[in-house]
Image 1 (cartoon, rainbow, N blue to C red):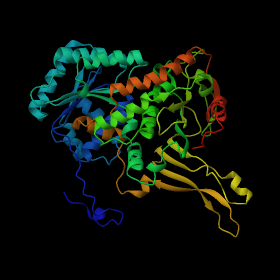
Image 2 (image 1 turned 180 degrees about the horizontal axis):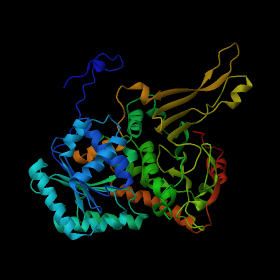
Image 3 (image 1 turned 60 degrees about the horizontal axis):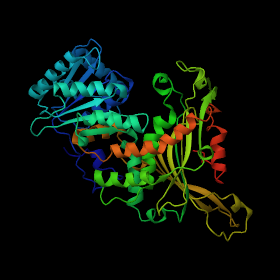
Image 4 (image 1 turned 90 degrees about the vertical axis):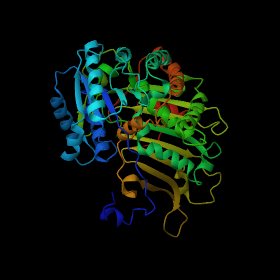
Length: 513
């Protein structure tokens, strides 16, 4: 296939860019939880988008497993509805027609319905024979963690976990990977009794985001950044994941879990590890993982968890021009719930690179706006030879990596204001993905699902990373459980007063994203 005239004549297109996409070989994916919200809005559209981009083979098959009494045709209609509404790329009937030929559905009354797995075995063999999937099958568990043992046991009993000859079988697990260190180990034991460790893919969709991967390029491909990425120049680092929505219909999952377990243990600690790690020898999965594990193992928690961690719970207020309910007023939440909807903490890293540099992590719901960012804040210049009083308000230099929603990088630095006086003010220099590249960034799940089918593991956390993350978080959540209720904060604000007091004790303040 040749490039279209629009691409070849585009002045923003680099003529040297002749990358060949990696295309999955013959295979199928069996999706448990296919009627859930995640599958409807993210997973099924991602599979269509991969097909539309020519990254799935013509022999690809997709099997849905669920309780509904659906025929293959009814399942195909459901998939058509999902992808036509939620796909990132243009919906084309001819692409879906090709995908439709490999769609199958297996009804199971429960996750341990033995006859259903017998039917699943038959359907998978049928895809091998009729569709040419070659015995290569991935099992996507988009289901609650307490259902993993049932599914894994049935896959083992039916032999679906065991490949023949040169074929492969893989399993994909959605977070959370347990709710503490003990449960994470128990969950891993269940999965790895059925699948080999190298065939277990733990999905953290944040690691599939283009900007998260660009963090590695920013650090290690640019001589201007890496020399100052250390304690000599960096004052502190802030990692923020703010949501402007409440819990919605997730009360059954969220209550008792809370923000720290829901997003800090996985998303934010992964961003932290990528920000703080040393340069890997290569970007091979094992080398990348080793550097992240070193950072997580070097984390030191604050001696006073009361002073350097905090949690909050949103109360009713105004947000986006409308009045919203507080957490305790949400459907399905008990009036005495102590689950936090905001969490913040300070972490220190016992390495030469980061000695004395605090990392502040915060995440929450019903905050000022939706944003995820990493802000590396630099120390102030030791001497300013300017006499004007305006320099007193000059802020610290910063590199801000915006993960979502406006993916890009912002540099903040001081610049002279035009005029006869030497007046210096903060200015920003901005890089945005949307205006700098002709290619649209794929959704995170597109990249991650393709990597599963290719057997490419760099973007998937290993079990040791999961355990190290829980070792960091468990003492904090245990302290919170024994020390009162979360602090209230009004919807639409930036968290409880205790979060601002936490940084004020260190002589710092949170950035306003």
